[in-house]
Every structure is written in structure tokens, then in C-alpha cells.
Amino acid sequence: MMAASNDHLRLIAKLAERGITDSRVLQAMAEVPRDRFVPAECRNQAFDDRALPIEAGQTISQPYMVALMTQELRLSGNESVLEIGTGSGYQTAILARLCRQVTTVERIAELSEQAQLLLAELGFVNIDFHVGDGSLGWAANAPYDGIIVTAGAPEMPLDLYEQLRFDGRLVIPIGTGRPQILQTIVRDEQGPRVTDVCECSFVPLVGEGGWPADDE
Ligand code: SAH
Image 1 (cartoon, protein in one colour):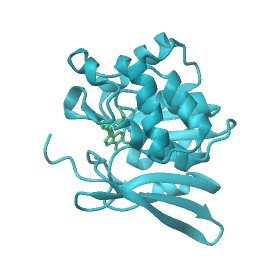
Image 2 (cartoon, protein in one colour; image 1 turned 120 degrees about the vertical axis):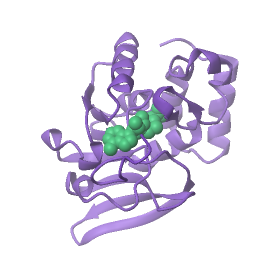
Image 3 (cartoon, rainbow, N blue to C red; image 1 turned 45 degrees about the horizontal axis):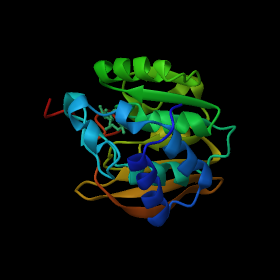
């Protein structure tokens, strides 16, 4: 992939300052060109640490949140990971650099198609794209070592939890208001072990295991 610009390098330094300590995550963030994932009119802000609008009223997450959520998965390279909410495909690309296989599910077909084109153009071959209700997970490729949800759910979607391997990690924004709480949930032999990571603000997870689609 292309060499990082000065703006891009400044962003990576800022992520490290804010507490991203996993060097593989920082390296992936330095390698994936975020400017390719944002709309043309926002390109000059691509390396600011902020969320930006994408098509269909959705958002590309803030780089710090992408890095933090990825770090929470504790990937070492051989994992199979499920992502719910493909969106722009930016988080998908970061995951694909850090694990063996990514399964990603998006409910809006147009977004999934755009992400597929871009990620193929960037040379990714270890991503399995699907259109559908990801609040139910993607049973065909289960179990997963990690599951990451980039939209907010009112409570932990049970199907997702059940598609985790034992000791697998589910990273998900939970809550009925804003802010939501980013939680990491480990599937323990005894049941879910929940850790609160931080406050966050995500678009709603719309589906059977999430919120009803009332505003669309
Ligand atoms: N990771 C993406 C985030 C996009 S915003 C990025 O950084 O670009 C969250 C995405 O979740 C939106 O694209 C939205 O359409 C999608 N989404 C919401 N509910 C969903 C569901 N039940 N299944 C799959 N995708 C869903």
C-alpha cells in the first residue's frame, strides 16, 4: 500500500498518545489509506481524528474508536473475525490486515457493494462480504475468535454471543441512550464476562437483535 502522508503519520502519533499500545494495530492504521474510504468532499479531513458522514446517512467511525475497538479484540494474526456494519469498509480493512479471515455483514446493499469494490482494488483477499441483518450474526462461518459491532445495540445480541468461540471476544457499543457504553464481552465457560471500555456514540444497530427500523 502507499506510503503514509504527514497528516496520516500525525494521526498515528496521536492514537499512540491517546493510549493505543498494540503496535500491530498502529501499523495497520498507518498502512490503510483512510482517505480512500471517505467521500471526496471530506478528503481533506480524512486524517483528522473524527467520524465523517458516508452514504445512506451512516458514518465512518473515528480513527481512535476503530483503533481502540480493534485493540480490544487482541488479534495476533490467525483469528477468524466477524464484523457487523461494514459501512465504508475502513474498519474491515484494518481487521483484514490483522487476522486470517474477516466475515463482514452490512444491511445496506449499496454500502456493501462500494466497500467490496474498494477493498478488492486495494488488494484484500481475506474478506467475506454479506448483506443482511448482522444483529443475528453470520452463523455459516461461526464460531468466531472475535466479533466487532460498529453500530449501537440496546443490549447484547444473544446470537452474536453464541457465535463466539469460548474465550472469544465481542466488542460492542451497548445502551438505550447516547452516549452508549463500549463493552468487551468475553465468552467464558461460566457465561459472559463484561468489561466497560469507554463511552461512545454510534448509529443504531437496526435489526432483530437491535433496534426496530422506524426512521427509514
Ligand atoms: N465500520 C463502519 C461503520 C459504519 S456505521 C465504518 O467505519 O465505515 C455502522 C454501519 O452499521 C452502517 O453502515 C449501518 O448500515 C450498519 N448496520 C446497522 N444495523 C445493521 C445490522 N443489523 N446488520 C448489518 N449492518 C448494520
